[in-house]
Amino acid sequence: MRILLLFFVFASFGVLAQTYTHPTTGISSTYAGACMVNTCSGTYYDNGGAGGNYAANINAIYRTFCPSTAGMCVRATFTSFSMNDTYFLCGGPSSCCDYLSVLNGPAQNSPALYNNCTSSPGTITASSSSGCLTFRHTTDGSVQLGGWAATLSCVACAGGPTGLTNNDCGNAVQVCVDTPFSSASTGPGLASDGCSGCTSSGGEVYSSWYKFQVASSGTLGFIIDPTNNADDYDFALYGPGAACGALGAPIRCSYAANTSNTGMGNGAVDASEIVTGDGWTSTLAVTAGQIFYLMVNNWSPTASGFLMDWTLTGGASLNCTPLAVDLTSFECSQDEQFINVHWVTQSETNSDFFKLEKSTDGVNYVEMVRTKGQGNSSMPTDYFIVDAYPELGVNYYRLTEVDLSGMETVFNITSCETTVTDARIVSMTIYDMNGQRVWESEEDTEDVKAALKSSMIPAGVYILETEDIYHKVKRIKFVQLDR
View 1 (cartoon, rainbow, N blue to C red):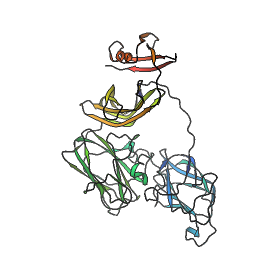
View 2: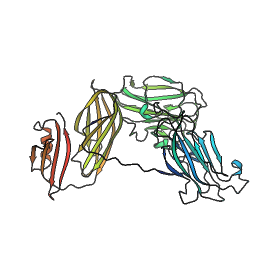
View 3: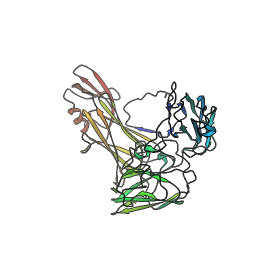
View 4: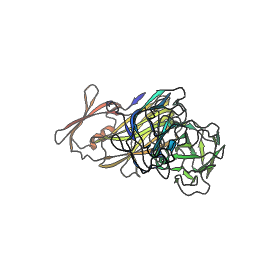
């Protein structure tokens, strides 16, 4: 992996295993109680946790765990289990009043591996192509007991996810024309990419990811036409400028519980709808250069595929050339009085340079810096920029990539809030990497900005040393770019 403009050394720490509890209510009028989790470790309890009993009147609410590593399937090893099996007229499996269902797959209708209350499930391992296990819990109001504790892990399995398909956003397939997709998605992949906005009512089930870039401005719509009209498809559109590691909430989204066609258009005026919707959202005005990610989700492992029929009006068209940059993340973080801005590209094609802009109101932007792109690269590349002079309050950052043809791609905006009030700087000194002093000043901080913008400090790596009125000295490594 290439690392560019690296200012700090980061320490790596171990990650503690997570604890999960079972939800008691569904999200947005569904049975899904929580978004899918990709993990190969953790402890899973009923909603009462380690020491409490489960709740009354839970109505078949479910949550799903999927592997986070290719070639693996999730395993649940139950270390305790106690369900109400004393009332024999309840009508549940084996006449259980309260029971747990463990399903082989990511959907609420996946085949059951366990569906009872009278004995512990023991150890259960997924064997579906998704590698996922789904847990559904049902209780009445009579007696609440201790529920369960289970250890989550992953084991190698022949049919588990490969991590190479477009079930994950990072492997999104670029599309630009009316394209038939004849094969059904096999599972949600190795990352829970799409679970915000209306998709939080189900997250990813049998999902596939696509990406596209607008070539000319106009209005965008589409129709998802299932091969089998009995199939229930949903969709979520992210962008413009979204990245797989920073999708944000979808700008168009339908998780309607309906079959047959769905999409953007058909006279709809709403931008988002949950399970009670009609399957249609409004079209979208798009601008040349914008990049979007589309998740198409279905609820049946036997779905027969679909035809994507684009509706482009007002001059809109899509770009069929490979995207110049596959951006996987763009974020900022505060480090004392500085702000670190960091982005990662998975690959670059004919990439010329990146332009980083800053704003204090989220509307008016001023260019901070330009940094050279990789041209053509299939390797991940990290970029780091330090804003040594953030404003008090919220600082907004906008990233733009310019390819060799001059076409610009504007990505999502990231923001960080500065709450630290800086003590006044009384001296500043810049040293090269040999420890030689190349510049110094006892003026205000605007002086160093002027020096960096001038030609007196050539391109290279330097150390900026500052001393404030309290004689506190700080040093920061930075890269002076070619101007």
